[in-house]
Amino acid sequence: MRVLLIDGHPDQDRLTAHLLNLYQRALPAHHMIDRIAIRDLRFDPNLRRGYAEPQPLEDDLQRATQAMLDADHIVIAHPLWWGAEPALLKGFYDRVFLPGTTFQYHKRSPFWDKLLKGRSGDVLVTTDTPVSWLKLRFGNPLGKRLSHQVLGFCGIRPLRVGFFGPVRRGGAERRMAAWQKRLTQLAESAEALKRGRKA
Image: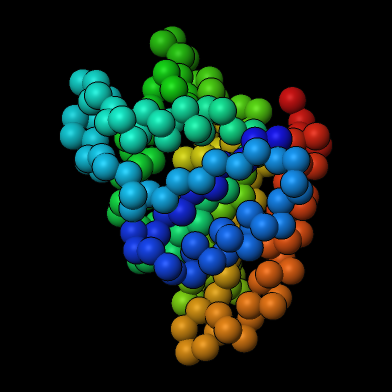
């Protein structure tokens, strides 16, 4: 199985990179691994005219797109800022998740083709908000959006969205052993997602 790891933090040496490292180390040895840090890519994150006019992909985005298309399982790690992913990662979604590449609308119906079908995913989200509060009080809006309007919209399923927090005030240090165990379980079960996926 080919796994693509995407670090969506705009800064280096942050918790997201550490979580991805733990996930990567727990993957079975026979997996092929590609890794991208969004901060290292050179691209314009502004989809300037929407889909009204094609915006040529920069070389880094072409390579990232190909890595995504080649992957069987995609893992994205990012912090939760103002209830969503950082702006640079959102810009990456805008520029790479394009009609004809990751989805295709039907001309005469409200439906669409999910061109990333056949791929599964994990999203690792660091947060300062208690996870129970995110889910019970706020209704898990990020998980719903990624599952229905972004990654799932393009066919990535099953999609597991996991929250790691609270981080501040020593929260990450206190929880790291439990998080490492959880990440190991996620990595070791990734291949089973593909085998167990409904057509």
